[in-house]
Length: 421
Image (cartoon, rainbow, N blue to C red; front, side, top):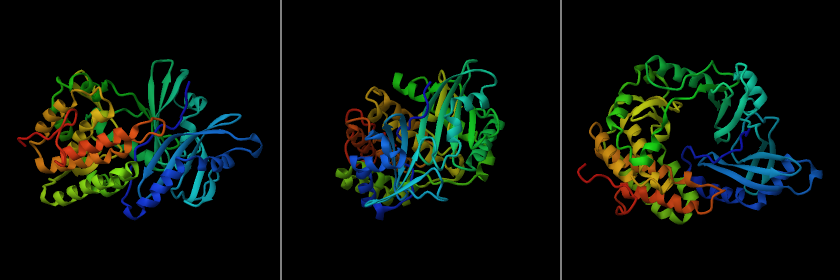
């Protein structure tokens, strides 16, 4: 049985261009051995000697700060969170340390100061007692963890059930529960909550089907109809319009560009040029009407039963927005799939087919520019402290964005925009 070990997280941030250089220095500091004595002093008794400390993940949110997860191996194996972000209310479980790069907040996992439900969701005994219904817990595994933001834990039980425990910041669990009920009541396929939230944790039944990504990997989703995804968005209930609106990818472009610069400082000129080109081109495009949107609409959040959509995942960003942004999210992620895994040989052909279908209902030029913006937002997500050579993958993602924007010619596994659009 495994528990939460803090896998890598992708950045989500608000713009903060003036702090880029400071945060690059903080990134370098948190990735260096210099931070290790500070971590050891905060989380271990003084008589345990020198522990072995390794970085497990790093998260950068431009304008907010940098957060790392570290494995600390001394007499016992534990994980520590270290962040330059401001953490309010001075939680008792958080240690403070002053450094030349600013103050640090340090905690021992799972006592994440912003996720009060994490100790519950990662404790096998408590998970079994809370959601087991008399069955034994056979596995408890981290699916994703964004320190100070959210976590998803998969819990398997001896009766064959798998639940996903979504751990959210204070007061947000009730909102997520309501979003799931809203979609289900409208007849849309979404994971079913097993109960109302418990200690800021929403427990969801496993959705049926397999990720759309598997179809793209196998044959470019040749049997899947692009029109089905447009019809799914059309079926969003009108009540979604009453939810709070959230920024789309292009609205946070400057933050994502800064995060990309922090990941690939040697490519700053290319990144800033791409940012400028997008910002200059957007005003001439038609964003379309405000409609119900998913907000994070791409292959990882869509399950398929054969060629048909069987479940819509991650509805946290559900709300009013623009159809072109949902479709650009889909295409931007599809464009970079070969940069994620070289086995996505059919992704360029799939990109061409889905782009032609999606462009029929929105401004094609706006869709192209926003798709490039999404691809740029994914550059810093390639950062993985445990994997050598991640910079090459980040550069590959950047080149995908450049091709979509016409700043470099298409070649090989770089999807290109259909010439007829």
